[in-house]
Amino acid sequence: MAGPILYSTNPWFATDIALRYRRGVHFAWVCEYFDSEEAPAGSAAALIAPSSNPRRIYNQLREDCEKEDKHSSLIAGYKRTFSKLAKGWFGDASLNRDQYDEIMATVRAPSWKIWRPVLYVIPRSEINPSRLKSVKIGARAAYGPELQIADLQPHEFDKIELST
Amino acid sequence: MIMMNDLLERYDKRTAAGVLARAALLAANGEPTGTKSIVENEPALWSALIEQARAKLGFKPEDKSPEVFERIGSYLDDESERLIGGTDTTAAFERLIRRGEFPSDLYKIRIIPNIKVFFGKDFDREKSLIERTVRLPTKEQHFGGSPQNRNVPQLVSLFAREFKTPYPAKNFTMLVTGKRGDKNILEVHQAWRVYASQVNMFGARDLVELLRRFADVYGYDILVDGQRGRFFLVSSGFVPASTEIQVQIGGKLQSKNVTVTRFTQLDPDTGKTQAALVMAVDLDLYRKTLEHWDFKQIR
Image 1 (tube, each protein chain N blue to C red):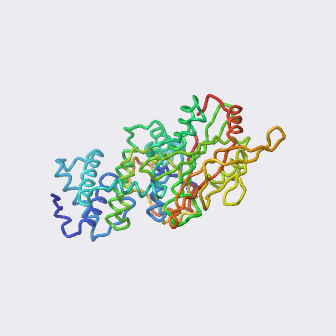
Image 2 (cartoon, helix red, strand yellow):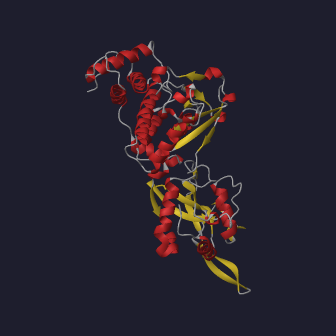
Image 3 (spheres, each protein chain N blue to C red):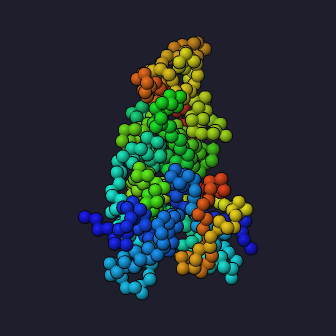
């Protein structure tokens, strides 16, 4: 049964960029479980890879930021992705040169704060099923289902930062 | 010299950089998420670019390991950046600072001497709390970047963060205000611990409102722009660093000289000095609060 809530963990920088440079359009990998390890045994969700589990990502990212882990593979991966995204957006003219420079300068700056985790809590009833894209198995971290929403609007979800 | 990839030579540099970046995303992430194709048959072009990069880097066609795709992604990203050119980081940061969008943990924090004098030997402890508040606030509010709007402070930021002790009643919110604009320096002018037992924080819609409520409790009535009050968001004219007020001492009304905290700023049209976030705090009363509610263990 489809869960009523979808969860997505992202660095704060992702939502900052969406709001400042992408007219509020958020891109999100989403999961029906905050903690897919709690999914019923034998269900497809139980096969979601730990690296795609929102709770695990949240905890790992928070720990990496708090401890200012310079070797954090998660933060390094986000930096690489946003570097590529900025070039793609500049290339399709949806960013101007100043905006491109601002994103690249920030990505390369030694800030920890911008990578802290934010949990998107998305009521599924707000999302037309046609907007929920199932990720192809080859692009998933494991067999378990992974979903994407490419055009999430700010009014369609809550952003939560969990306290320690 | 930039060697334009033969697969991309029909496109201008900017378009080609975008195609390379999307191919880089496809290689590294499995799909070019969050971007859109803008040239004809772009997916086929991505595949060709990835295979070309694979050959250039010396990877075997059958090697499909994530590490290989990550390397290919990085290579294509570098190629894209070569076409776009370098980033003007200094100018980018200046714009972010002006708009109040600069990551606050990148500021160099400078605290005005008055705060150091007030805390004396305990200054280092308070300084650490101030720095933690600015670097990782739970709330922040920024003014500035629009000198035409003289009804708001200019280049001023407010930060708040909750600090906990083993005793919930001794938990507090640190409220810090600072001035931006001198490169990446944040000059901290005010840093107040706000205790829920002393200041009603419930429903404060923003940090200026929290500062106003703090001033309601700890502020003296002062005269600014001909009006009496405890907190002024902006003044239309100059506000001196100290002012004389009348206070009840031992049942008698006596004059007292009090320090006024404020941010000075220039009116862009007249060149006259104005002030923002103006208040005169009763530091004796504030010190009593700290002495009563402070606790060594703060996290």
